[in-house]
Length: 160
Image (cartoon, rainbow, N blue to C red; front, side, top):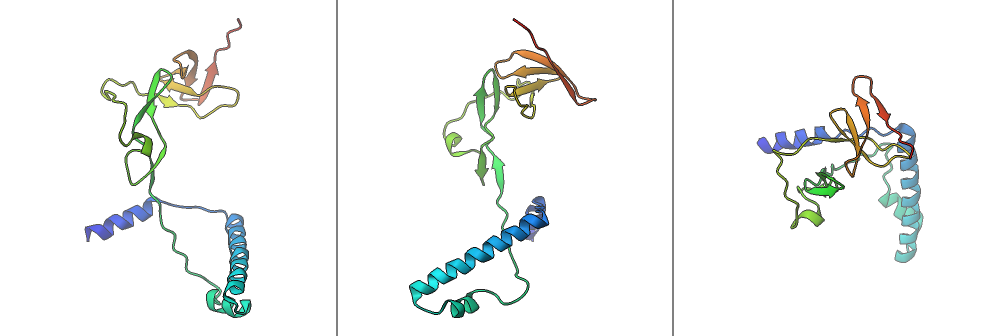
C-alpha cells in the first residue's frame, strides 16, 4: 500500500500545462510523420501502405496516451563561481549528483555558509547575486542594492 501512495504523490507532483495550439500542432506533426514512416516501412516490407496503415494506426477518434514522468532534479554538488560557492544545478536523473560530481565533489561547511540568491539574468549585466539587500557580481564586487518590498533593484554605475 505504501508504494501505491508514493506513486500517486509522485504523479501529482508534476503538472504539465500545454497550450491547445501547441498540442494540436504536435499531434498534426506526429500524425504526418507516422504516416510517412508507415509508407517507408510498407516499401521495405513490400506490402500496400494503406493496408499497413489500417493495421498500425488507430481508427478511433480518441487515443489513450500515457505520459511517463521523468523525475529531473538538480545536482547537489557545490561548485566555485567566482568568490561564491553554489550548487552545480545540472540536471540529474534519480540521483543526487551529476556525472561530473558523482566521484569528485567540493566539500563545504554548510553551517558556516552565508545564504545568497541569484538574480534572474538581466541583459547587459553579468550574473548577479543578492545577500540581504546587497547586489554582488560573481567576483564579490558590490554593485547595487535591492528593495525586496517594492521588487526594485538599484545598480551603481561608477564612471572611471
